[in-house]
Length: 114
Image 1 (cartoon, one colour):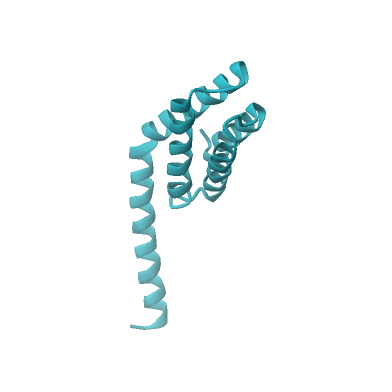
Image 2: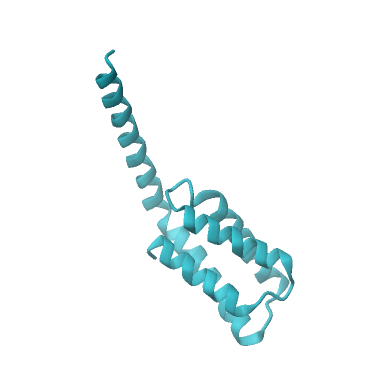
């Protein structure tokens, strides 16, 4: 196989993989939106009460961890980094700064175009 044919074959495989990945992303968009909505609700609770229940906090940590591990794979490295920052913030203190949480969640929406 010539070098040109090898490059063309690699590009074709890459395009096929990208299409498959885009399809998985589209299929998971409802779940991703639901998880962002839960993070929005968590941020709102923190903003109004200054604290959240342990269940809400643990749920937000779990969502952030899932986003940390998956968003980069879908081509959203900034979203993954933001999620990691949120996870670290929530793990570092039982009373995270509400404004910081809200800022990170808003930035995640922006980075994902959602």
